Every structure is written in C-alpha cells, then in structure tokens.
Length: 242
Image (cartoon, rainbow, N blue to C red; front, side, top):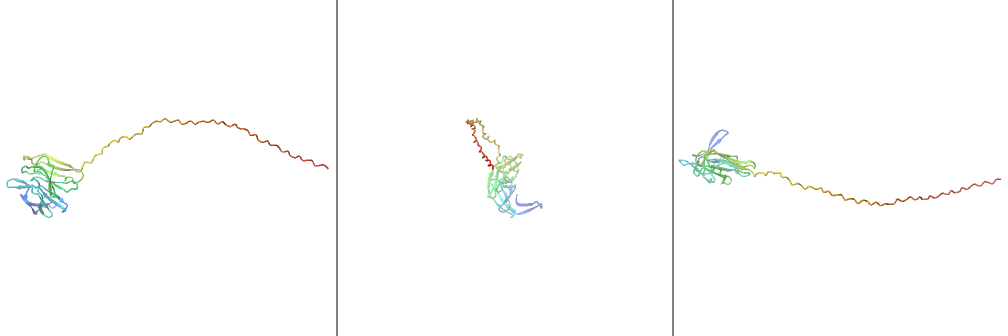
C-alpha cells in the first residue's frame, strides 16, 4: 500500500512522480476529476479506499482533494460510510455544478454495499441517492455524465463484480433519469360543431292588391270654332262720263 501520486502524460507516454503524497497510504480508491470554476482547473476528489492491516484489506472513509496544478493535497468531509474497491462516476443536473457519485463497493462487513453516496464539491458535503439492486464490489460502472443538458436521459451502468457471498456476479443494472419533464403531447380534440342556422320557411305574406279606381274617361266635347264672316269689299263706283 502506498501514498504516492503519479501523473501520466498521454502525448509523451511518460509518468511523473509528484511531490505531494496522500496523508495516509490507501488502495482501491474511488476518485473523480471535477472542474472547479473557482480556480479554473480540474481537482481530483476521493471518497474512501482500502487500508492494509497486515492481514487483510479494510475499508475506510478517508476523503481527499488533490490539485494537480499546484501539486497539493488536503482533506475534505469524510464519506459517511467506509468503502473501497469501487468507482466514483460523474453526475450533473442542468445549471448545477457536477457531483461525484461513489457506487456501493467495500468488503468489510456489512459491505459490499448497494448504497450510492453523492459528494457536492462546491459545498463540501455528502448525501445519499437511491440504492441499486444488488450489493457488489469490484464491478464495472460508469455514467454518461448525468443531466448537464436539458434533453435526453442521464444513465449509470454497472455490471459484474462480487456479491455479498464473495461469488462473481454476471448481472447488469442500468439507472435512467429523465433530464427534463416530459413534453406534453398535443392530442387532437374534435371541436364541438358550430351551431348551424336552421332554415325556417316563412310563407310570403301576400302583398296588398292595388285597388283599381275606375275613373271614367272624359268624353271629348267639341268646341265650336268661331265662324269668320267675310268683310264685304267696297265696289268701285264708275267714274262719270263726260
């Protein structure tokens, strides 16, 4: 068992022994790197781990925080239960900081456990989420990061490991959490029929018949024209003869 911290650089395929060391030697430690917006870098958190008492492995609840840039390590609030031989996986909800979930594990009775402990890095506190179905240790587990967005589902998968009786397990469990409330599905509703105007046949009222007034046609009366009396023309008198 050791307290040494090593850093691996994939680009150069090299290992570097860091100056910082764990306050106590531990193995099979659940660890997770979480981005800290306050310092602008990733910090590595631990929760539990195995101690060696000279005869067997013993679960512990020691918890630490390591800054790989500053190469410094310190303690955080201890995980509420002793555990080891498991993993920590990331989990998040929309608009909230990332959390660390420590999944079951442990071998010191009453372990192995099915308990899921959650660590809140920004408040340095612990809580508990739903238990999974079968208690186990040394099992494969991971998540898709949870619900850091508003769509889809957050998932946690776990499989295999060793059960409470020490026998290997082949079972698998999947946790699924909707990232947003389901969108209501529009259901087509037939609108009630609009009132239809009912044609009412109204018999036409007879128009009053015009009253014919028989006005007698006046009989033309001949008006006598005045008779022109010829004026006698004067007759010339014959001149006297000499």
